[in-house]
Length: 199
Image 1: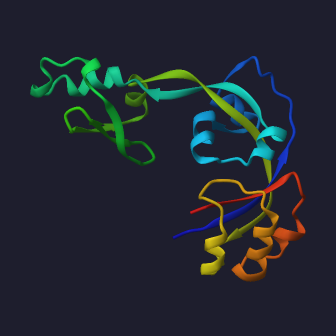
Image 2 (image 1 turned 90 degrees about the horizontal axis):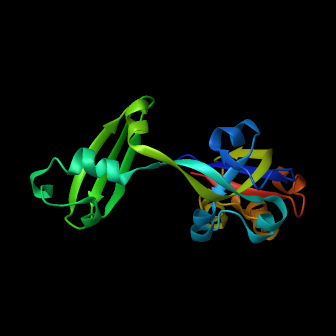
Image 3 (image 1 turned 90 degrees about the vertical axis):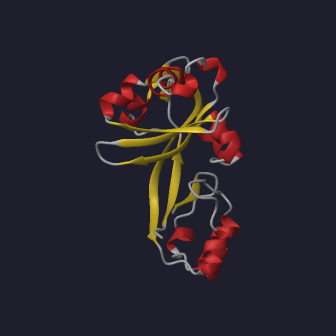
């Protein structure tokens, strides 16, 4: 299992909060975002970073159009002859990605029927729509990095996967007893840095 640990510095920036942005526009400005829904569910950003370093805006995201999926795939099945989209409850229950192909498993929870879909980029566009999503936008720069190297105790001290932590005491404990490089403490700036790990 891979482990990448980053120390990131959050930066203040200007952004027109009245504008609806596309993902590409944000990435061109070297900005990242988390949806409000994901933030509420996963607490990706600690509250202090959320208040001091984010702008809340709408971002156009590509989402599956489940009505189109129903009409294209489910309606062809014999058991759906008399069913309408309103009778269904479609959910993506599996996905896999290659460079040119995406695979999805869509399940209708009203019937337990699953449909496997393979899509190229153009196929996917025909089954998606752009919708505005409430998001928190932020900007970071990498200050420090470590690949692997933690012991079992260090793993226990990590924040949740892909979530930021501003808990300096925990980072100090990771340096002292968990296998994290001491440069993470030397580069720590209270109020603007956070640790994040991906595995």
